Length: 282
Image (cartoon, rainbow, N blue to C red; front, side, top):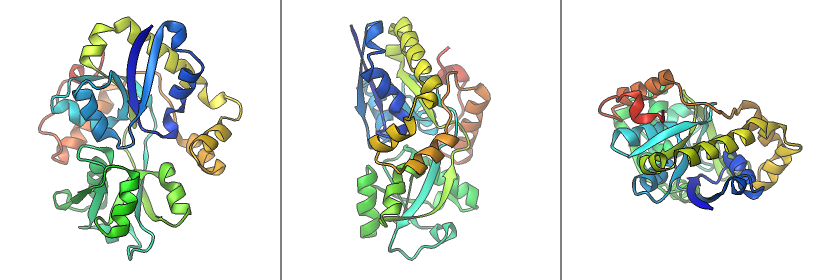
């Protein structure tokens, strides 16, 4: 049995991995896949990949592409979620902010630098015609830190996945002023170069298993109820989320990689674009 370490956020996107592990699908191929939740998100996961604290990660596209341009020795194995991520833009429920325009030049709570909550603040600024160079940030580590940070006035708004944060909107902790979808597929399966180079056939087995699960995922009986129960979501919210979410079983297209790099370059978040083979497992 070969042990393999994989990390991801504790969100509904990753249930196919948990089902495959729980049902012994990886064990049948001689793989002990050890999953660790990383609630801090992509910035933390990039660091763990760079430090070889994990072999694989399910990670945000823009975050890992930026990290690889900065020297992180990792590659995209394939797309995991092909649809955009819907980033809700949240403020404290008792704040005076009423529209997205009220947030110009206000301080953004982010999990850490290089995370999705950091990078998508630039994308939103660009969409709104704000000056991205004037963005201000407060590092809050995770969702719990965001609740405290916005309540205490350490930051003014926080961007996080729409459905993950919806219970906090429903209970009156946050107000959501709008949404900002990623202009590209949102989650990638990524591995360290060291692991990918040493275990090519093993990686192929892992990909085959997860692709089988994601292909059939929406057809699992009562999967919407399972998701709602496991992730403390309202059933109608899960059904809406499933309607806009598409899992992928193919590599990230080079033209999409180019779009992400060009966007990051335009926002001065990377210094230069690199060739596709730096990012994509061939």
